[in-house]
Image (tube, rainbow, N blue to C red; front, side, top):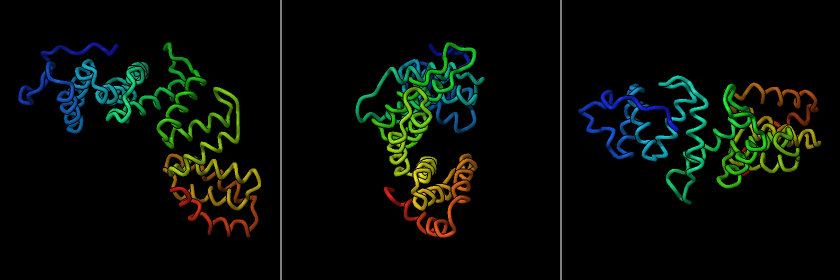
Amino acid sequence: MLLPMPSIAQAFDIDAGVSSESGPFDLFKFGFNAYKNGQKEDAVEAYRYAAEKGHTGSRWALANMYEAGDGVVENDFEAFKIYAQIANQGIEPGSEDTGFFVNALMSLARYYRNGIPNTPVKADLAQARQLYFQVASTFGIPEAQFQLARMILAGEGGASNVQQAKKWLNMARKGGHAGAMSVFGSLLFEEGQTVRGLAFLTAALSHCRTAECEWMQRLQEQAFASASEEDRTVAVLLAPQVYREGN
């Protein structure tokens, strides 16, 4: 269930030509424009009405707002319930709602991985791993492939398997995922593929997002410190080439 909707008397600008009785797509468009204009209360209201009419994009937008506390009081459990509605609704092959569906599955995986304090949603690593596998295998999303590989490496939600993890990391890094490239390179380095592993670690560091650069830099520096001067030089020269592999 979604949270109760405000009174219709508080509803939309009469000049907008949109009311609670409007079609779901019109309500979604109104909510989208209201959000862009900073009118987040109006956006939430429009998304709620559209969500009640079954509009997937509105459900997703509303869940995102609850998850981030954006225009509403942050409420991870409410976000979880809406994401679950999207997941349970499913999609037809080729549906324009595929992106919303995939993002909902990714959000559910994160919630199951960590649980939501003081709610019925407890950590369920097996469920999180299964959701990441679904997205990684069916939709080929690099972030899902990376998170699945991390769980497999750590033995979270199932058995640990380095070779399976490497398979998913390799797929993700070919999709341009810098984090996957870094962990993949670290595994190669540990296996004795010193130059190639260090090349992947160096390439990843050159393409990381700010939030991830610190841990990638630590991995790269640890490998760099234990490599010979010759291996370091060759790896740095090889880094641009390994980054392009599969991209």
